[in-house]
Amino acid sequence: MPAKKNNTANTALEALLHAAEMMLSARSDDMLTDEEWDGLAAAVAGGRKVQPRIPTEPGEMLATLRITKNDRSRLTGGRWVEGTIAGHRFEALVFPEHAESASYELGTSRISKFHLREQATGVAVACFDRGWDVMPTTTAAMRITDLLAAGLAETVYGK
Image 1 (cartoon, rainbow, N blue to C red):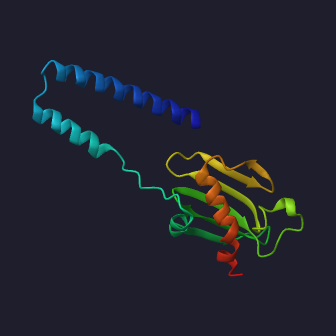
Image 2 (cartoon, one colour):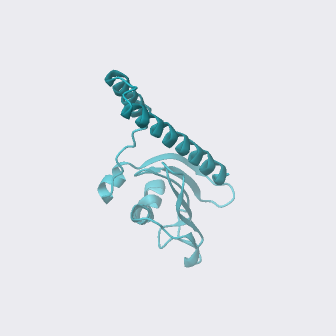
Image 3 (cartoon, rainbow, N blue to C red):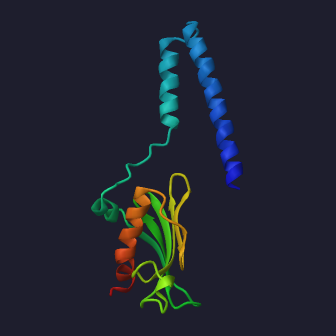
């Protein structure tokens, strides 16, 4: 499915570039008035989705933490926690106690499963499932992983 999304994005980009070339050509031939040109510029600017500033400092990142789901897992005894932080969406399986096998846990976090995606792109930037499937791929992903590993279990369980 990501390939279809990428093809759609490429098609849209090609169409946009073609339209821009046509508009530049029309402008250079004085086929657009200043008012039409300004209207076009305003329409393009209005159509752009303004991306919020993504914090990079740990304190600022933590200030954006929102937990949207905190459900008990019937199968594991842990809790599935979902939320957002610093422009990323995460999902984690968090336990009240440490894992019997240290390799099943993200450091000493009591997290056995952890998935992190950039919200703007949907790209997975970290994935831990009783071991690393995808090590954090960006500086932001590393910081977020460290922050959640340091305190998510305490936030969920209060200990």
